[in-house]
Image 1 (cartoon, rainbow, N blue to C red):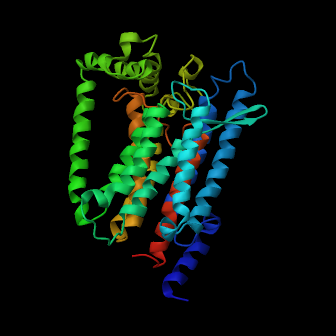
Image 2 (cartoon, rainbow, N blue to C red):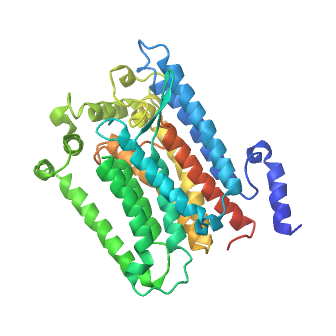
Image 3 (cartoon, rainbow, N blue to C red):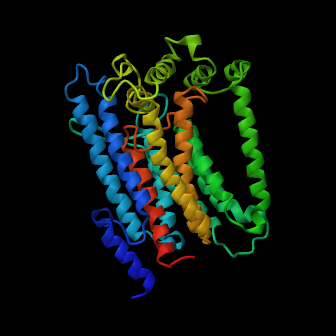
Length: 408
């Protein structure tokens, strides 16, 4: 037995049950932060759901019960993938099949009726329960893996820049168009697009450099466009855009939620009020006032407002420390690892967290339009919880392979 493997086994025994389901070499800090986030999210979902449960005795039990089942399934997915996922899978014949099945699942959502203007869910016909699966959450992982498979660690000499990036662009483009145009889910399409763009900046292939420069320029153009649209004069531009009315209202509410505080701005105004009420240490766990005042999405998109109202800025800081631990640890490994595929997975998973945090916090505070992007592992939602845990499992497998000397 090599000294490296012996040290890993010794460390595994030292940490006891935390490593019971983890592959040797996985990062303990990431694992602990994930478990704490799951438990914290489950508790806060229960608290935030109390207002919605008034007059419905079974709502709270069903909501917390479903979330518990989803995080158990997600945990099993995370630990299984951390043990079994191999980078070689990305070059196998099975990976294109996974991509094809993913697109079929995205198209299957169109069979079901729209919710909030988007047709992004598959409803499972279970008696007495409303179970939905959102395939676009899992498309975020597949998009990241597509970049790793077709752009990372390639020694092929391409004839031109287009040949070097055409496969990831075409495949990811199909996902984005399906989610944005057919499903009308702007938030998920934006997350898939941004994760993919960041991942495409990682390969060092000389023939990709012009494309990477174009991505950087495109990023700053998008930032400038958002700043212009959200300026006081942006309302004129928004009203002339050929987009759905509910999307226009989200932009207009971000500019000035008080212009229609009992209509399109009602949700955002209540969220801002909850933030202001929380102060440093909040009103106390379970003592939120807003959740009893017909506050839409209190346990999903706007759960952060309930957390701050009950636990204050201290609760918000605790949450950010957990997210920060995961992101920092993954990026620290990404810096050390030479394998581009491994690096893409680690950076892509970090961006998965960062983009969701930015979109959710930006949306509930009015800095950017609401996108419907959840706060990972904290907002109620089975698909987002299972997806991010699966993604972390894949990242943990990469970290383990690096620690055990399987990749450089």
